[in-house]
Image 1 (cartoon, rainbow, N blue to C red):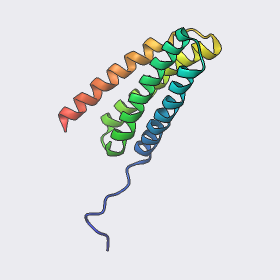
Image 2: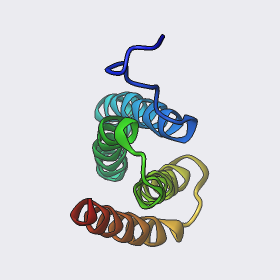
Image 3: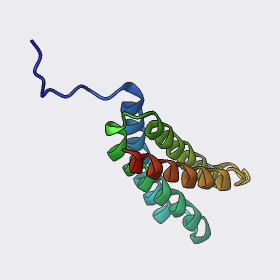
Image 4: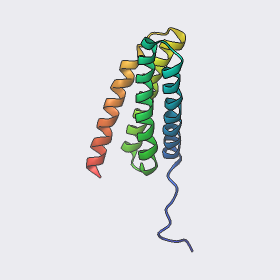
Length: 125
């Protein structure tokens, strides 16, 4: 007989998003250290911005994902994850590979829309 108060583990997409959030936060700490000690000031500013966005959204994903049971919540969190990766990744690619930052505005817009979708879903609960 199972215990009715026992909680079931969250579905794998929620666990994967929580893990991705933790990895983003860890990478952000390393990136901030690199920006503070390994590059010239102009590059450090761009890398610090990438680190701030990766860290903030990584922590949010790690905290919110495990409780995400609704489809809109999961889609919003996937949008936040994709947006953070596109935004920070675009800034990193510009630094390391001299790539243009064309994906940064798309990533930022995706984060804004995803946070608004999360807000709508939170109000509907």
